[in-house]
Image (cartoon, rainbow, N blue to C red; front, side, top):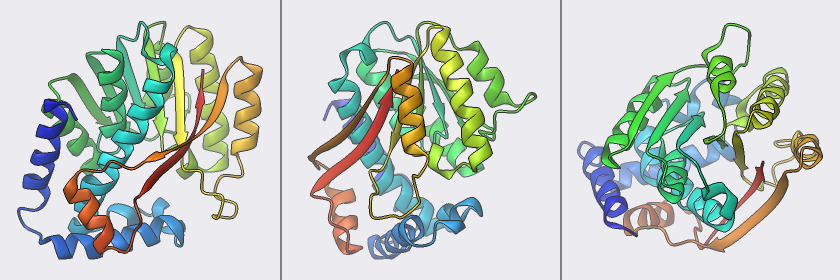
Length: 258
C-alpha cells in the first residue's frame, strides 16, 4: 500500500481501538456479519451501526475491504480513471470506497451522502486522512423532488464519477427505481457511474433487482462484471476477521459501470 493508505490504517486502529479491545471488536464483527447475512431487516432499522463495537468493526474491517475492492475495480477499468475531477459517493459509509476511486483517478474533490450521522462523521475524518477536498453530509438516498440526493445527481456533469457501493441493495424497491432513473440521467449528461454490490448468490432475494439494473446498464452502453481476487487485508482487519470466524482469503464483488 502507499504511505497515505498505511497512515489511514494506522489511524483507524488508534481511533477505534482506543476504548475497545480487539476481542470486543471481533465479537461485534461476528454480530455485524450476521446482521448483513441473516438479519437484513435490521439494516433498515440501523442495526448495522447500533453499538460502538459494531461501528468499530465496520470501520476496521469493512472500510478497508470496500477500499480494496473499489480500487481493484477502478484500476481494472481504465476509462474509470480518465478525466475524473470529482467523486460523488452515494451511501458513502466511512468514505473508504469513494476515496479509493478518487486516489485511483486523481480526483481531488469528493462529496459523500449517507443517512447515518456516525457514517457522515467518519467519512469526513477519512477524507482528512487522505488530504482530499471532501465533505460528507447527511442525506437519504431517496430521489424525490426536494431531496439533496436528487439535486446532487442533477448537478453531475462530465468529469464527475458517481459511486454507489454497497448501498443500492439497502433501498426499498421504489427508491431503487427512482435512483436508477437518476443515475441513467446523470450518465446522459456526461457523468460516469459505478455501482458495486456483493455477489451474494447464497442470499435468496437479496439482489433480485440486479438483473433489471444490468439490462438497463447494458442498454445504455455500460458493462457488468464479477470480480474475484486474493484478499490482501492489512494485519488488523485480517486478525479481526479470523477471530470473528470469517474467511477473508478472497474478495468478491459485482459491478455495473457506465
